[in-house]
Length: 71
Image 1 (tube, rainbow, N blue to C red):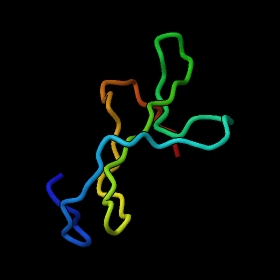
Image 2 (cartoon, rainbow, N blue to C red):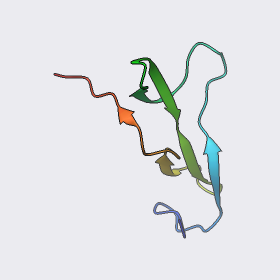
Image 3 (cartoon, rainbow, N blue to C red):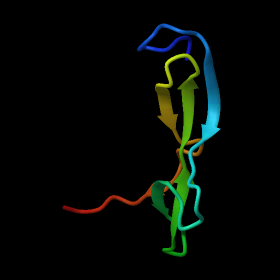
Image 4 (tube, one colour):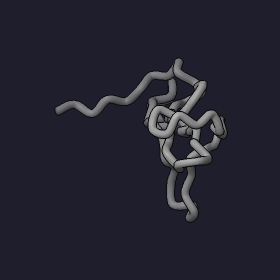
């Protein structure tokens, strides 16, 4: 990420893990393990330090059996 799309700043802090203040569960994308147990892949963010906007939200491991809820 070269610059913020909102304020054009290049003051971007990368690789910040998104989390909770209380340990009641994880925030992230749900996937199924080979034992049919659900796991959660953590979110990471790139943050503009000048305007406070989230420039990017992503996961590090994309190779998962993602759980998709059927409608």
